[in-house]
Image (cartoon, rainbow, N blue to C red; front, side, top):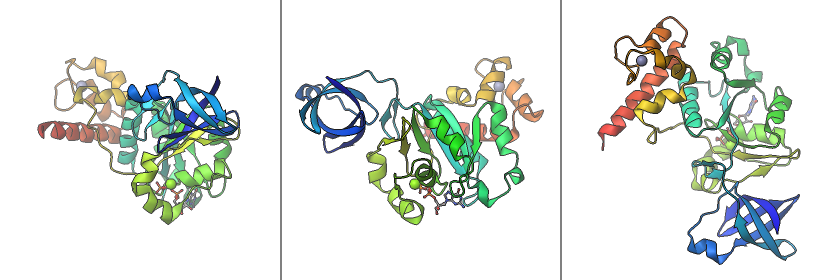
Length: 291
Ligand SMILES: Nc1nc2c(ncn2[C@@H]2O[C@H](COP(=O)(O)OP(=O)(O)OP(=O)(O)O)[C@@H](O)[C@H]2O)c(=O)[nH]1
Ligand SMILES: [Mg+2]
Ligand SMILES: [Zn+2]
């Protein structure tokens, strides 16, 4: 049997990257009975039934699964924001970070379009996130700044690009891997909001090994799967000081002798980050009330 990885799924056909060719496969009947749904990123074994055709015989265990977009075995997410146009919004960065942390992915923050502004004029955003421990890159897809560094981080991995519309995700990918020809700008804006791009996530191969997934930008983030008591786990610097709170059920909201509130007021935790935490906590609370 031969091995491959599902790069695209469409109408019960699976496009398998195997070596450097694409084999179009169907699933063995028994998988259908088991109601197993194979998704992009799954590793499989197949037998050939024609030069570029085959049948999937075996599905290897999944190491992870990302729900939106549906992709198996993702290693990392590249959260992409534009420094300007649209201007970077720290509260939106924090919201994307929470979702990425919740998905247990390695995280790279990429601040793009630095050709349009003096990065040092941004309110210390790079330092803010580096201090928490995040990897932060500054890039300009248009001029090539930071592209080699970003490309290096993608080799041999499955990386999902996410972030608001217009940040330059597709432009970055086109620059990193010439030939992808992803739609950018106005058009992508329109298509990106349609169903197709999200429903049919695709693994795009990188010449040096590894895959990237482009996603349509969205600014609306929901936290319906996150419990109030767990939210702090997705803010690494908050999780670190939380054990020092007086109450071990402390949500770091109005409780007395809260170490997190203390850290936010003396600057060990950035006040904006604490504010983002409170905002999301409130949203989760209000969501719960609805049930
Ligand atoms: N000046 C400058 N413009 C850029 C840069 N990267 C992208 N752009 C422009 O920004 C616009 C949006 O880029 P896209 O790549 O379509 O953005 P996206 O993140 O894929 O957006 P969606 O697909 O809607 O989520 C396009 O007009 C790009 O040409 C950059 O580094 N510098
Ligand atoms: Mg795009
Ligand atoms: Zn507390």
